[in-house]
Amino acid sequence: MVKRRKSQKTLGNQNDAVTVQTTTANDQVKAEVTKASTFPSLRVHRWIPGSGVLLVDQASDKKWKNWWVRTTWTLIMIGGFFMILAAGHLYVVMLVMVLQNVVYKEVISLSHEPNKERKLPWFRALHWYFLLTTNYFLYGESIIYYFKRWVLVDAFLLPLATYHRFISFMLYCFGFVWFVTNLKKGHYKFQFKQFAWTHMALLLVCCQSHFIINNIFEGLVWFFLPVALVICNDIFAYVFGFFFGRTPLIKLSPKKTVEGFIGGWVSTILFAFMFSIVLIKSKYMCCPAENFSTNAFSDISCDLNPVFIPVEYRLHPWTVRLTYLLFRTEVHQIYIAPLQLHAFFMASFASLIAPFGGFFASGLKRAFNIKDFGDSIPGHGGITDRMDCQFLMGFFSYIYYQSFIKSATGASIIILQDIINNLSVNDQLDVYSNLQEYLVNQKLLAEKVAECT
Image (tube, rainbow, N blue to C red; front, top):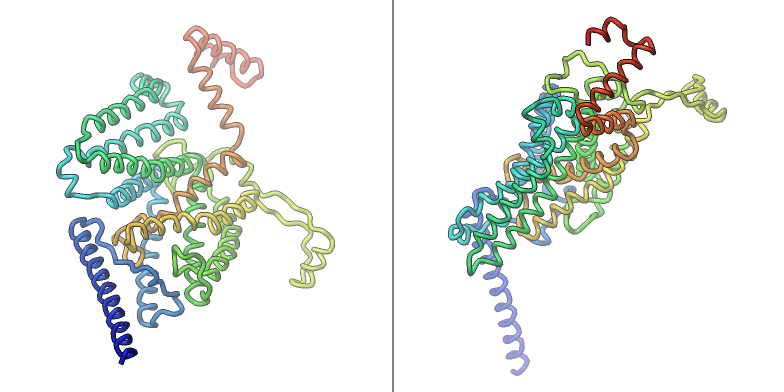
């Protein structure tokens, strides 16, 4: 009798526990439905902790349906990307800026609380003001640096370029004062959280996209190659995980597998080595941006960076014998462009480090209990879901290029321009006269031409 009562009591406790869990789950679903209806930009799929299933273990119909949707939109995005790439540097810059603004909007939307925001005047306007101020500073720096020869000779642009940093700082100070004067009692904690969230988004989104645009100005290859490597790694990691994935890689992203991670790395390295051969044959890709009027069909000429010029490598005798045994032909030397060697390190970063930008975004989504940042791209989620790795890869590419690849000649010209710009008018005329005399004496400039100038 006592045992029966104990067992009934235990069963009752279990039922209570099930009821509590069910109620909690229902409340969670209601809360998410309410949030989705309140924030139209956050109508995303619900994520349930621990619900991640490896691709190979998913139902066949669901798995292949997702495969075709994802593949179709991947091809559409790649096709659109190539069209913009061929249109010219200006359109590529505009693409990056549009993507940056969309990602910024998606990230900022995560922390919106309309009930509180309605009571705070100019609340959302501050988000966009700080974005505009940051872009004015960052892109102004890029334009002044890369197009100095035009900016510094224009009577209107010269003062803006000279005092650009001071103007940018004062614009930021205006926004800072605007924020402080709008602090409202009872909302201090919420407002300071939003202030910190805005600056985090500016740092992770705007600053990194600024370096991506700098890569475009240095030459489209430094933009296109990193983007292509991330896309290649994403595709092959998905393919290897789809067919062979069995070992989970990281808890933050349950569907990522070790097999997909390694398969993507090896495939990306091979792709980088071969794709670099194609890129070095295009001056449109290799030449720095001189103006915004060029496109893929323009006649472009420039002095190529040595990194694009193949170098001869003599093979060791045992390597010659090995190639003969394998291919029945003797090969004594091969030609490899330094870019192909640099591409190995860029491919390794794109495969081993850049994915952690995606894992970081996954952790952020788990923190807000959402599956995707949006639903603008079927099968992929929001724009942020596609750009999470690209930002980190673009930043790395800029640092890598500036550290190991950038030609010293271009940097010397920029330094010389800075020195001349800081001279007085009389000193500038003296430099001009001395340079003219030097060119005439070296037979590089005709005396008649010098007299005319």
